[in-house]
Length: 167
View 1 (tube, rainbow, N blue to C red):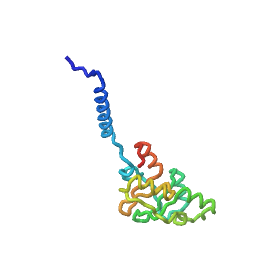
View 2: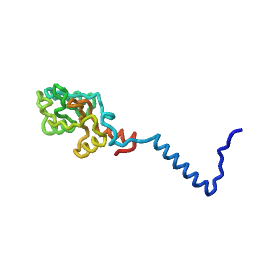
View 3: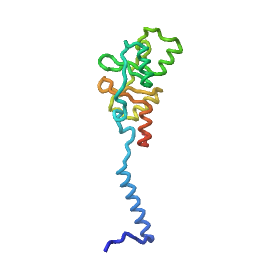
View 4: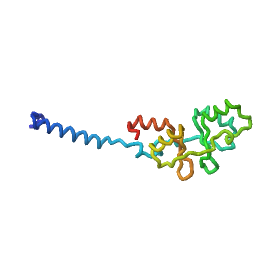
């Protein structure tokens, strides 16, 4: 004979039912614990396969790559893969509006000569705060001094959409 799980809940049963519901919610939270953006390193959300440019690359070649690959930015690195700057779509548009670059223009003439980076163990929250505070859409990620990835506002947005807990 099987045991019935049917219970008649009177006044004492209401308390029992509430206690069971609270225990079930606590168990569900433990099983589906979400992690906040301050706990997740940017290495978990960064784009690892990035297109980089050297400062002596012709601007025409860079523009061809940016258009062909639909890139919003291209980090500029030295011979040791250390970031030394970045070229963004906005940089390109501003230069084209001001005056078309001469045919022999190089990336060093167009790039923002400032490398704003985060270590690969920085948090997603830190990256989001930096990008919002500096009004930037991309931040270069380094390990040591070597460029290992890039995080965009879209990467952060995707992470928030998937995990539902921005910070």
